[in-house]
Amino acid sequence: MTLRRRLTLFGVTIAAAPLVLVGCTAHSDAADGPGKKHHVSAPELTVTPGDKTRDVPISAEVGTAVKGGRITGVRLTDDKGGQVKAEPREDGSSWVPSTPLQPKRTYTAEVTATGDSGATTTRTTTFTTMAKPSKPAITSTLYFVGNRTYGTAMPVTVAFDPGIPKEARADVQRRLFVKTNPPQPGTWSWLEDGTQVYYRAPDFWRPGTTISVRAALEGLPIGKDRVGDAERKATSTIGKQVALEIDNATKQMTVLRDGKQVRRIPVSLGKPSTPTSSGKMVIMEKHERTTFDTRGEPDGGYVVDVDDAQRLTWGGEFIHSAPWSEGDQGSANVSHGCTNVAATAADWLMGVTQVGDLVTVKGTEVPLQPGNGWTAWNVSWDEFARGSALPVPSGLRPAPAAPPHPGAVAGGSPAPAPSVTGG
Image (cartoon, rainbow, N blue to C red; front, top):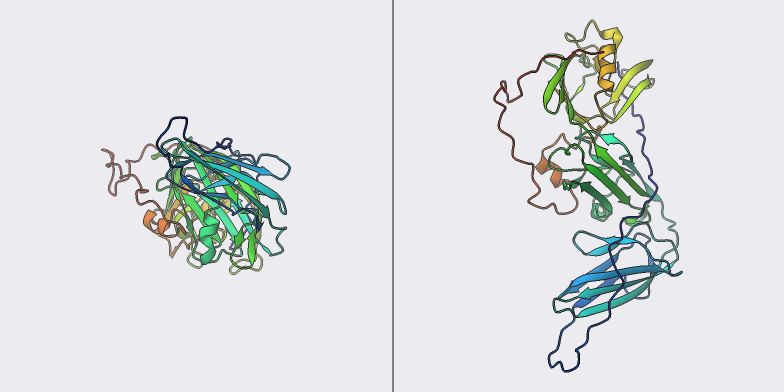
């Protein structure tokens, strides 16, 4: 039993927490000491926004360009003398305030660069931010909640309403920050219509990885007539590796933990008029009990309470308990597109899976459509990287495939382990 309707996922606005300040008080320009007969050239330094610039967006960063040296000090203060915490971009092109600047306030940035010889150059710029924008805001939703444990296929997802136009995506992407510990770099990739952007690494997240996300979009000019709506942050951890593989040919679900089979579960998929999608999906949300209401939907018109439901698509495909179809599970497809499993199996799965676990369905009549769920893994890495609005490092590639296990069966899959029963 399933539905073809879109439930709204829980998107959380995380309270802004200061990022670590990386910086120090600016140094004075170097001068030749007594008796020196040589000239020490100081580095060339340019700072933006320019001095006395007005109507600066509250998303502004302190841009730094240096020739013949490196940045060794940045201090940003407001018009009340308070220090504004900030940190540098990885490429050193700018310093990003840890929280949005305030409207109609004046800020002073003092930046110091030091050359290889030790000579320093300091530049000071004072700028004033614009009033609160009157342009409508694009609504953003961060589908990555803080203090959670996610599966290894969890993409960081930001959704936009309306979608971001192509010419504005690079500017938006530059304000989306992801840090991983231990480091596991990735990239963002946009859906064609700009309504969702996903972040993932070339390979699945390593269990135990901590991921910190910041969508610093508040006040960001987007295109000609829109601005970003809010600042959103979250930090969570990646849990154990779990994956589900569903095969329409056998009508069985294989449950894998750390790549090893732990259970096979009979399933009933979508009947020909309402087929289940084939592709690589991610568990998006889990409900011990929920109501499917398909009134007004094609092939719908019913209201039913279901237990142990795990969402896979925006269109309403779930894995869920279906005691009414247990006689068909493993032999016939009778659902409206969902994956039906027995009540005891559904209850067991709820204790095994995490939001962010990979679910692969194969052999059904229709392919998974881009954006129908978190479809970041339903394409190759090369195709995913092409969806970035900014350059992707050429060395960012999936790890070489491991050689087949000595006990592998045809197709390279590990030899099945004994089935584990449970309720």
